[in-house]
Length: 216
Image (cartoon, rainbow, N blue to C red; front, side, top):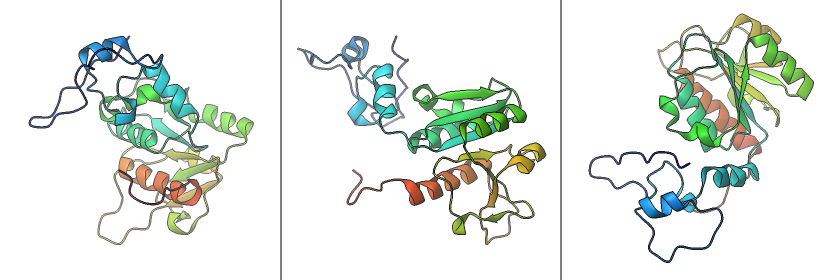
């Protein structure tokens, strides 16, 4: 079943319309999208592809990085974190606490990611220990080391907390590494979605294969 097309922004055409016939013979393509057009929030190379086909293609090149988000207060930033995780091809994202989370900011990108739920922090901590994945908490707390000068483990789980309270005490105490983002202005903290994006990009700079030349 195809996901519903997204409405285009006023004055800006998003995606593509119905495919001209005869249609290509490719099992990755979705007949409903070929017939009705593809207005989804996906890269052009994935136009008309079935969702399962896109996931399978992404699985061939996902990074070993995971991201965990504590969902204690239905934070609206969670969707934005997931959207960034999709952009950086993060291997999986973890939701700690409430299973239901605000998906609006994800812009449907969560449908192409692997989601793992943990009822509480202890469950994620046990999972990470069993998988041999270091926990890296992102929070500007006493003792945090500068992210900009820290080598992040390739198979890390970056943990971000809620807007306001930050990473929970239990997660901070269990973390193998606590890093903070160096700030130079007057604000005491960054928005959690922005902090998560910076941390993921820092990992990308250290471990991902960055293409040479134009991106488009």
